[in-house]
Image 1: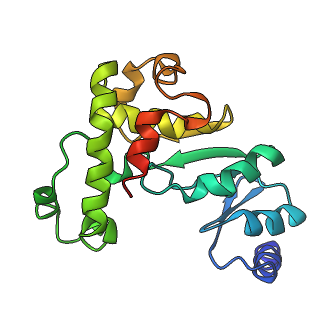
Image 2: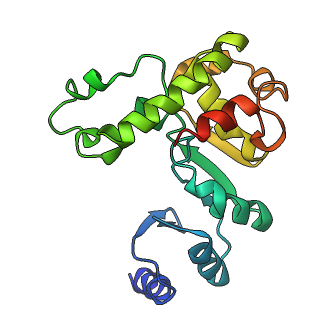
Length: 193
């Protein structure tokens, strides 16, 4: 218990607001939520940051600006979640689907699922359709592949078992994505927002 208090105290002093401590055998696992590169740097001074698990998608690219590059430089693994942005970057999502969410579904309260953000997100998704059609894959597969283009140390939690069917080398083929996500079709879609 004294160790827990000391760890929380150290993290609070460097500006960590959300800390989750889990005891696994003799190891104390520290999970820090809602981080950016500056906070990662402060945490690194206390102890090596082993992994980061940010939301990361074509819609929410914030982690790709500073946190993911910071991890690449510091040998920190990255496990991205929500590459399809909770369904928005899938072929079948429509505004009408929002009304079918359960009353307690967090998406009912999220700005991502209401205009104007919903309209921008679906326009981005629609701009990916021609690229997906040319490659014979779904829009969701393009979204997941884009998320995986930030380096070999980045892993993805797709939330959909169908992506085990796709060969990552095929999805990440330079003809599809281009080096550093410089694929014209995707850049055009990103410009929609």
